[in-house]
Length: 139
Image (cartoon, rainbow, N blue to C red; front, side, top):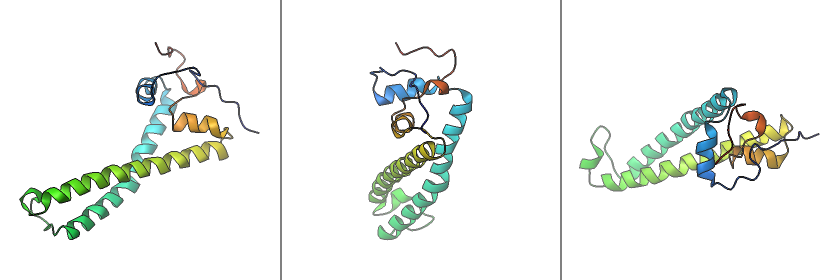
């Protein structure tokens, strides 16, 4: 049977970005640290090797010589632009997949309703029991 999850601020009209930044600091330490470390570890362990592989592949495509400054090579700027776009795309994909895995874990292992897990992980609409007891509602 799914658990009943009560949102801390059910009628919140703030944007996703503002809500995620402001409410992150209202989370209890027992929630904030594991959540942050899990995302950071996934970015490093999964995203890092993918980015290194893409960087090496782009270096072969643009004929970038190993050990020489990129900006001094004929296609160095093109490599840099392609690498930055690839970096952003890879990190976005890794983040989206990890959000899906964490949401599925909350639904499957913790018996959360799927809408509650989606709101907590993807939309940053945290449940009441994740917040510090002295957290004030948004202004």
